Length: 214
Length: 214
DNA sequence: GGGTAATCTGACCAAATGTTCAGATTTTTA
DNA sequence: TAAAAATCTGAACATTTGGTCAGATTACCC
Image (cartoon, rainbow over all chains, first blue to last red; front, side, top):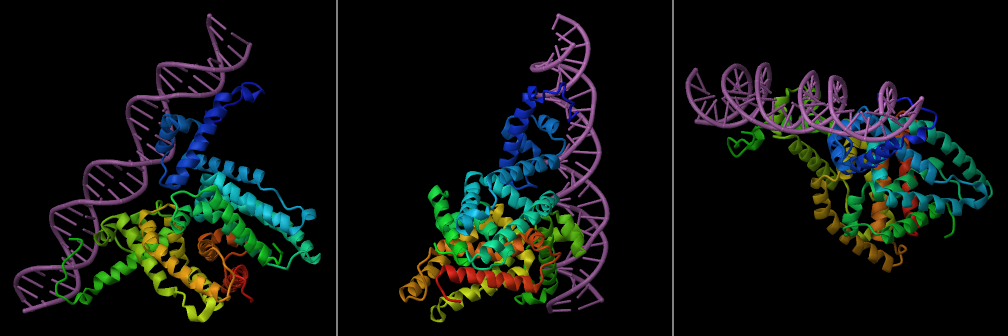
């Protein structure tokens, strides 16, 4: 069966499973990002992973299952690597760190970013459900913190929703639409320096909007 | 043949052709935006247009041809409706107008915006070629104008590339990732008022970055 | 109204693709 | 080491899909 019962409680013994699943997930993410979600075939993923197609289907029953597993790993990665706001450090440090972490993510793992964007623009129910479950509550927390900062005179009042929409748009555009960015910047590949410039530009923009001195 | 010789010089007489092509293009754009480029089948487009599939293929030899025709019409629309910078009016009026026009476009024709974004994220050669041919030169013109404004002390010096990347990201996110925006704003549909708010927010942000008083 | 060009369309086809499955092979357990 | 569980895989299948085509129908011109 595709979901075999563990022989005993120590499921770590099944390292073959973990290893192959990781290989398939990483490969699938890359192929999805390069080819687009619908254009990608299980055959492509299998070939690139060096496995027969039937073996891929042994671990992931359907293409949809595989895509959702990829999306889940992407979302998990993000939850792990973007830290939340903490009131004490104030708006400047928090916003700067948030933007820096988001852009680092886009640079270090552009495939993740692109697959997520593709799923979002294609309105995949899986990611919409995640956003509904996670982001709405998250935004509420952030709103409270920002309100507090505003009350303390640490920043100007701004629309929290539009602020986050803007930060997402600005930080992800460099990964998601890298083809466009590369053409505008007239570069074959984006260097770390380009991302650092982007980081500075976006940070200055956001801090300025919040009335925070740079 | 698919490319029939016009019977006489007055090709306007062939209104059937023009009419059906327009119907197919408009329908295709809608379906592409809703389903994604690869998931869309010529059958879907035909059904939604109320035509047999073979009739669609009579006007557009292949799916790729049809997609490119759609993209071309989208790009043409944009060239027509976003006016260029003119030095005399100064940075504030120009930037404000540019942002306003871009967001209006996203609101009035969300399908166009989304199809373009899908093609861009999928790195369709057709749009990349357009960007190379058109945008690079366009950016050069805009850079000269902005340099002039900076020299006249009308605005702070900024990276023109990042400025335009930012304006594109900010103005299009409301159409391209409307699903995400709707969830964050907790609305079923975005109203004109939402877009106006976005317009103000983005404008304030960009003007601030350029050191222009609001 | 007759002839020609243009348009339309049902039927068909070849290729691609997601998925299944039976049996071979390997790994783990007892 | 033998049984059992897990993993692997070539081959096959059903469906979908882009695209074709011959013949019917309609529009247009003289």
